[in-house]
Length: 164
Image (cartoon, rainbow, N blue to C red; front, side, top):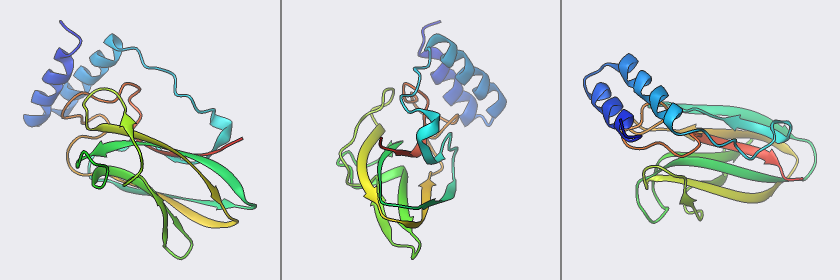
């Protein structure tokens, strides 16, 4: 079996509504394609939303006590090819609900797998205050419900890290 067959078979199983069998094929694909260790150290995570499935809008609150340089790393599904419209994406809001950063319109790179898998890595400074990290996915391509090849490290979501 080629290493692409499990994803093709998992897609067919999902179409047939057999999510258990689809998961078995995802696991087989993972065995063929050794996961790369993610680059971020756990102790630097300020907030994170990971392994986002289909049709989700997840939120995590966090507080910054002093001006802090952060790195934001996100992987999602870019639907527009120009970065302006994402099907699966994340953003940060301040306490008033204002969007202060979002994956859309950021420079992105291919995250491996299907070309629509895109990743962003951006540095900003957050001022003291309360924030909420958001991640929204649509009804298609998402963690463990891939309709085409998953990203190379299987990361699907957004992380905010202390920069130093």
